[in-house]
Image (cartoon, rainbow, N blue to C red; front, side, top):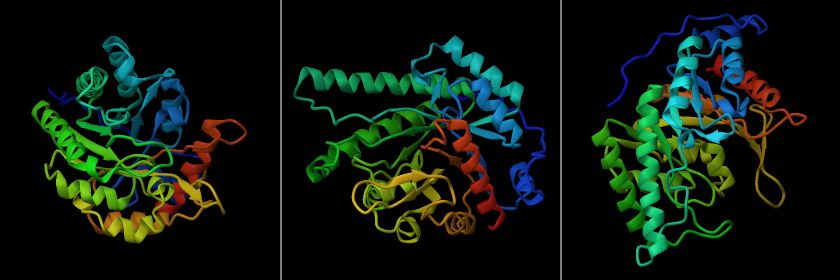
Length: 310
């Protein structure tokens, strides 16, 4: 089912960057990961986002929303148009983002719960179709949500793992892999939750979108190195980066890469040490003077500085 057509990117020069940063952007750095940016963290217009990526010489991107709508809500002709834009820009899709299982755990003893689960399976099928068109076998998913600010119900985990295993089987049969992202207010929010998930669902078609910053926001006191070291690194399929500052009270505050507390150099070195071959994708999550593009540029330059030290 997967499309095998992938155009190699012809390296462009990030002329405005110092040589070492331009070399990192061109892929000259020896580290094994690939750099990407979530396109709607730059602009909802894919053409604008791709121009940004080309300016920095990046070869990969992550797609969540396109032109103001989740990719899974667009009809396939629009997705084929997006694929043409990617090909024309020489940029490959690293992972397709979905909101699959980013819902409350459906109750199967109610009509609404049964309908909710059917809608999730329909969403996964649409993700398969769109990932195929866009040229990736990797799909971002979640592990169900609980009440905001609350604690997960431990009794719910067996059913959650069963449903994730079923989703993984469906993905494997169709030729795809699922990269489940840890996120606050989810049943899989921290490194500890992620480690338990991987132990419960052992299929090679399931791995992680490891987001250490989300782990911190969910209350993890040390997402790196302790949190990362608790994970099976071979099952990390995708990595999100941004930065955060812990507040005296309340949730962490997102900020530019290099402006906060997270040890990006240490995390990147650990990924390199462990043979990570996936993408490291910037998910900016803040703005500068209301501009997503300015914030993404600021964070990308911080990330490139970290890469240059690996």
